[in-house]
Length: 178
Image (cartoon, rainbow, N blue to C red; front, side):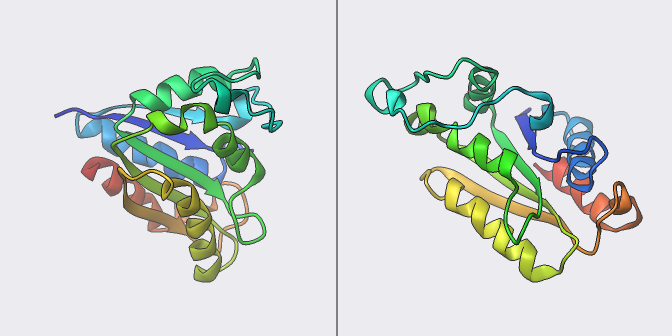
């Protein structure tokens, strides 16, 4: 059965390490017969949550008028969700946190997603785990989200350094298995 895969890449760099891992995951998923789309948050106009609580009073509604409405629709429609982030100070970066906060209007509608985390870090395993835990704090809010894997690379700082690591193959294989 073909699945719809949605990759949310929060890398500010088009050829950033986490972004490249997304491309490999997507390539594997498509070769396995699944459909997929990568969204680069850096290419979207997404405002931060202002805490106005309009979505609490009217579920599904957001007072913000930006590109997040399109992303929420895609998030509802996907079967597989990939959240990809570089590590910033032992956690996910700002654009990913902003995206997570802006999911609130559809919070009660999100169900039955397989989730993968893609994490690229200059540091070691400890920062990958702290970042994965940051992402789990979000996905654990949903009873029917199932974490399927963490694709990570450590010791990479410069753009594209991930290409010299085995993480490329891991991302591709995870996409094929999704």
